[in-house]
Length: 244
Image 1 (cartoon, rainbow, N blue to C red):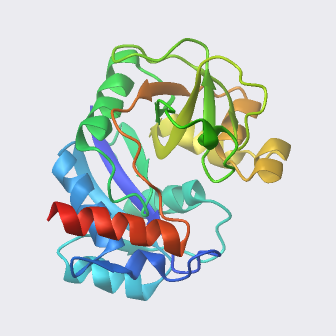
Image 2 (cartoon, rainbow, N blue to C red):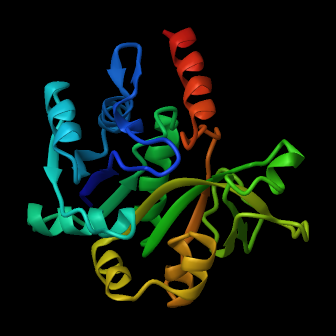
């Protein structure tokens, strides 16, 4: 089966404008993510963006990018437009990788792809164990509740996604911003209007669950920090500069 990785990216993020082009070790964050996706070696990688500056930056750093419309409500809408414009006939799976998670683990990306192929799933994502109790209350950290306890081998279905978990339900994990769709499922997903739960919680994955599209979850080895704030960016920058 053939996989295409599409990374949606835009400059107008509300909390940290211009974040895809912020530099770490002399390279923009979006280009770090692009190179990480290429290193996973599971298929071709394309950045889908509404901004010419992002497109220029990615191409300058040896990547591929495509310009999309500005009016998209979610990253998946942008991914789907890019997919249509690229007109790939022989692609089976589309992986949507977030442009603000340069520390995503390569093994985790490959594992999600393998689980999708092995289980013939419609839609899959990743989650990691929560070690710090404070994360349950942190609304910037999205949680997923799964039908079974996650381990290295299984790929159970998600019951719900939430920003806050006060009830301390069993099998709650830290959801990571990566999705893998089969071609028919992404087409179906895009055809639905934004759902009540999606708008209320600012979580587009609830649109899938509310329209009876099941989401399988694989256990990730690590929890990369996503960059939402200046603080997050400085923390990631420090880790990546130290590693290099």
